Image 1 (cartoon, rainbow, N blue to C red):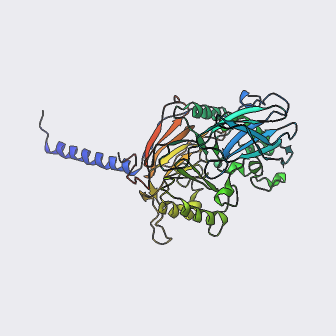
Image 2 (image 1 turned 60 degrees about the vertical axis):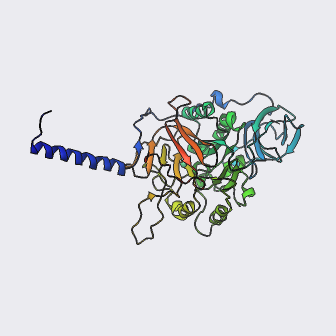
Image 3 (image 1 turned 135 degrees about the vertical axis):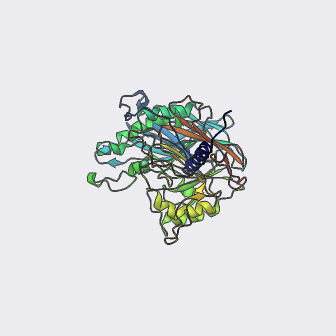
Length: 469
Ligand SMILES: [Fe+2]
């Protein structure tokens, strides 16, 4: 080997030091911005005559059948459906292999929105179900009957495994259909969907054409008639349209989608909680008042105190507008709610926060930004093992443009970001471990494009950041 001269030794030293500084800079600038490039064309809605929007055959046949949890523990299910020709029956007939056929009676409602009149919207709550049991149910009694089934969750307990699906901002484009198909065919097998808001995007059509609420109900039935979707409101559910004389926010949404908010002491269907298996799930509304002294503020303050981690170790929060988002789209829209509630999330050691709104994917490190007090200048997020991981999963596939424009450099708190459509699963194994995986639509059904082992913040508060490994 040739001997180096003094000048070349200095040059080599400079290269080493420069390399070290550069690698430090990369670490400081946060995690991974995926180089995956998806197609750039704007996605379009599926046409109204698509097979996924097909009206079921038969006189007054129930359509848009969907279920959600009907109480706080998972022993009740709300069954909803729409009939078009006439109100028909509000009764749900249901049974399991171990019980005889029973009936439950509900209510019917309709609404008008500008020049649109809804069909007959039925909501029936089935109560006193047995845990972990497959039930069959029939709607449309008296005319065309349709049969479906669901499986109730296991009894709430600290080590009960359970797999949640995560979908946000779904819409009804060709990409939305791919997202739903990928969720259905994911071998991880989600048992219930945590939906983080923005359902059908009817408000993007002229006069908020509510026909698109109906098509979305028919499109999603193939999943939501068989497993509960836990609803969060997004901005596209507001449907505030004074130019059309429609000034009551959330009118179509609240008529069509019921949630068990009273069971958790909430006074409005936009914020509530449920327990399911080993998880305590708190749903918040980015579009209802959340400042001090508001109903949502008082409710959340009480709610966080109620969470018993020895019963439900996993504390999950759903909301629509993300608090941490390093895309330029919707930048800082979640900031005022973050200022109000982030100290509580750290104090109560929330495990994970799922949000939508930004049509892309992003996962954060565990960090918080709660030290700032107007005058001290401490306003940069810092690593915090008591803080949640924030995940933006608003990548369901709606027709609004995909968020591709990112803030640069990638902030230190951002672990992974990618502008692709997809869905995720959160697979709770026991009180200490959960496996999280994000799936992009371009991959095979079993492929996880981003993943993380979550360590529970109450039972196993060990550093689980992916960049440290
Ligand atoms: Fe949104």
